[in-house]
Image 1: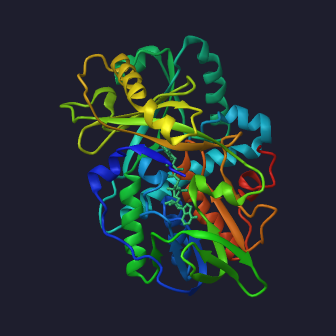
Image 2: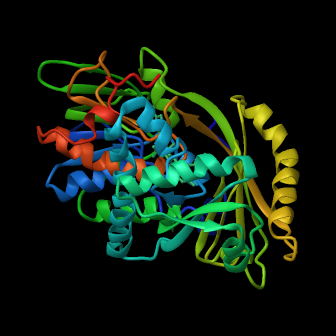
Image 3: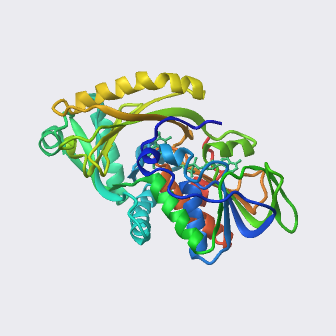
Length: 403
Ligand SMILES: Cc1cc2nc3c(=O)[nH]c(=O)nc-3n(C[C@H](O)[C@H](O)[C@H](O)COP(=O)(O)OP(=O)(O)OC[C@H]3O[C@@H](n4cnc5c(N)ncnc54)[C@H](O)[C@@H]3O)c2cc1C
């Protein structure tokens, strides 16, 4: 499965950032993690902090899956409005929003603890109404969020124009948001874990595993075996191959960064922007003064078709950028596309699917909040391995009716 096309900005700007050896022979560990993207790295970190012995296996270069393609806006706001989630699951649905808000603080703490900067920056998030007819739903959403103690303010058209230069009738505003360089964060975190004795093996493909009474036995495509007590499947959008029933639909999402501009428009140096239209456009700045705009999601799931669509998507994203920031001359520099899986309710799946042994947990951080979901999942996995329940087990678990 080819999960990205073009030139994801983070790999261009950072390069390879060191390397990890392929697994050379059979091995034993307490917890094996399939996938060394941001999910696998965060899970390994949470487990290592709690004293577990972890080993990571990845078929690509570590961080080179959808983590490299991510635009990495960190928001507590899920693609599914809180109002809709409550309609589906009742008031406990607010736990998902609250946990995402806390995950941003947890990611801030993690970024600050790493030996090198990873592009983490606190931002404001502005969710603007793309059309006047979206205002009524936005007011209901604002009320629901306030009722559940979530940080949100409303901005009217005048305030939006004055503070951000945006022409829209209304927006939801919060200071509980951030941005990060997801590839850099993953690689620096993995390097730190390795320096603490965690084994990280990339270019090591897992072909499958068997659950035996004494151990989970993993087979690699090269014929090696890894015996472990617990297995975490954090293989991103490719995890679905090990499920009996699909839990998400694959789409494609497109993004570009511009050449650096003298002054970032729309306060993008410290603001994340997104909108109510579906598919929505989303914007952020980069540390070196570029505009990053993404969106134009479609249902393409064939890499060749997605590659062919990229030039057209770049034209459309640039047209949207000109509409939003007509006074800033922007030139596209690098563009890319990535597979993007979405669940029906916008929530991730974390836990043991019914067809698997309880020692096997899946981390499927799908949706627009993938990275905050990965952070939450790292806690959930740690709790499960230590035999404790987590407050999100039901809402994010495979037992919910989220299909
Ligand atoms: C264009 C785009 C924009 C996005 N924007 C945002 C955003 O703004 N904010 C946000 O929070 N999220 C965003 N996301 C989602 C976010 O990027 C993902 O949720 C996150 O990167 C998933 O990380 P992961 O580690 O679970 O998956 P991945 O990064 O894909 O890592 C999984 C790893 O598993 C490995 N693997 C797969 N199969 C095997 C196997 N058989 N054996 C060994 N290894 C295997 C892969 O090689 C891969 O490295 C975006 C995604 C895309 C594509």
